[in-house]
Image (tube, rainbow, N blue to C red; front, side):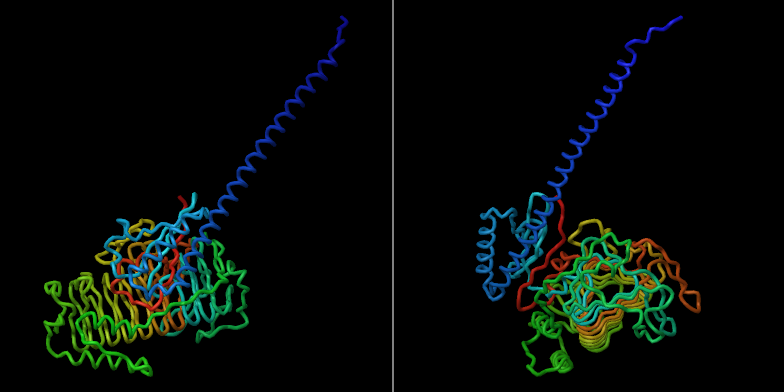
Length: 539
């Protein structure tokens, strides 16, 4: 049989043409769709950058307003008039953002006294918002960790907040610890979460990331051949590679508002029923302490007219609601179930103070405290206090929680959480805190508050487990040592069990800029206003 195939070639050509035409149309459609998506994405990124730029501009406007106006010298009503005039000018200028005054909103009523200069502002853009605090508070409240001298971070704390150093910043992946003698252990570099601004006034940054060979010798002196100077633009490399945060080096240097503990101590005494007195311009720190002690020694009996009560123990102080202050003369060993004072009352200890909970029960301390000597805290305690210490402070063999263990999880917003604010004139040492507790239990062992010293500070979180929602700051050198993972005492040394998770750091510091509002009455006042910038939030 003969098949007739005439026309089949034409059909084949037409079929191939249809197939390729269809494929071409699909590709063209995909390209157009991709181009449109790219265009939309570019617009989104551009909008994000524009709104973030607007936030930065608004912060700069507020900072400029505070810097150029002598606000802290004005009567409160004139201060508010100038602030409202500034906000009206901004909000009527169509700048791409608005600034709202939240100070009188329900969230802050009762937290900010009418005579205080603290004001809470909210910058709004279509996509982002950011709270700003104008306050007569010291600058250290802005930072998760900082030093007015040299800041050294050994090992792997988890940092959620800004970092400050005046003279130098030194970072290594070897944590130092003491077990009979000085030792070191290799771990990871510090981890950061969120956007962390790093300020080093001198631009001197030194890094040691070493495998096998310690960054320090047996006396904890630097092995110089392992350390390198880091260019500030490479600051991200000073933190562990698994960090989920971004380090931003801040080139604009700000005016630093410091704190004078002796002066604050004197002011709190006079607010608490003691006669006015002053320091001489040439008085040293030791001279000022002696003057304060001398003034307290004059009180040998209670003075009801001034609201000053002499006490011999620390029981049932909440029964005396009309007193301004309670004065204990001499060194005090305090082991009681609880101490409760009103927010405007002060407990004054004219000597050394040792808070020690020897039994199984936790000691709960609620109240503001002035101590002329040294302070030591040991045992199981919780605090809601502002404490000023003219001597040195040690936290050892201690388990500290929020007041009555009421701290919320770090992801839960609760402005009313209990706060410990500890400021010491002498050295601050923190070691063997919540020692050898499993690292994943950190939320159960948390301090909400700020730790500050006018001298040097050493923080050991190698066997200790410490979570601070607030900050640590030192006017002199601050050295922090932290391990990532679990540790145990085997009787001859520490036994290390590394954990690669960044959340497994034995020291976590989150800067919480709202906490100072809860204890504003007890905080030190300074002569000028400062601007404290909170985190950026997406709407």
